[in-house]
Amino acid sequence: MIMKLENKVAIVTGASKGIGAGIAKAYGLAGAKVVVNYAKDQIRAQKVVDYIIDHGGKAIAVQADISKPDAVERLFSEAIKAFERVDILVNNAGIYDVVMLEAITLEMLQANINTNLVGTILCAKKAAEVMNANGGAIINISSTVSINPLPGTLVYAATKAAVDNITKVLAKELGAKGIRVNTISPGITETEGTHEQGFMGGEWEAQLVAQVPMGRIGQPEDIAKVAVFLASDDAGWITGERIQVAGGQL
Image (cartoon, rainbow, N blue to C red; front, top):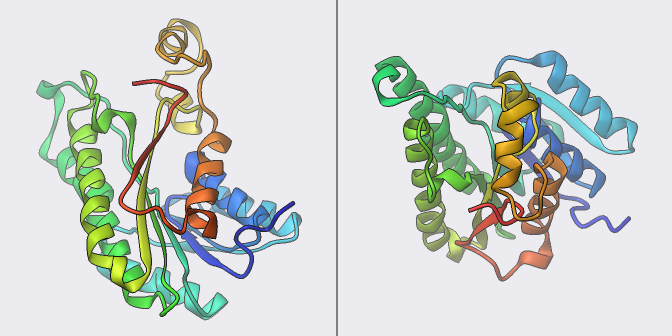
């Protein structure tokens, strides 16, 4: 296997499950030293770490609520303490509530904004501070709904549209420092979350598959392959881009 991320250090937020876990594992297999961030699920985060170590890589798990500045400081401090540097940040941590307008509460709105938007900015700010003169890569995880919102995704779609614009702005601000900033926008992807929300199995899944020209639900590995590319030197002339990884789903 070509170790495209050898000698790189990556922080992946929200990496205890789903797309984040898939990216963290792929980074480990590609040679990166990986900081597996989690908010609550230490057991799942440790399983991701164990997977990376069992496959010959290096990884640690760090608990941090990335919506809180002190926690972000600690996350990056632990990364530097363990691996001496940070080269890659994947802003994956997010909240996905499917609710119609009348059911939206202020608490829900603030929680989504704090994690999906504030957390992304706080982590990007710290990454830009600690990345060295060789630059680095920031990858923000958005969604197809950022440009094609569906009923019930008002809050989530709004925060992900903001993430798309964060990428565009930061690509222009950080280019001079050699830091590339890009967005990956997954379509419907099979994760623990989509199972818990009832999207997998039965009529719901059939309807979702019907929207995907390639005829299947995405897997975390599909997203992870693109995340490896964007973090690698192969993507050295790519910044400010939104790459939709959705099997043709609009």
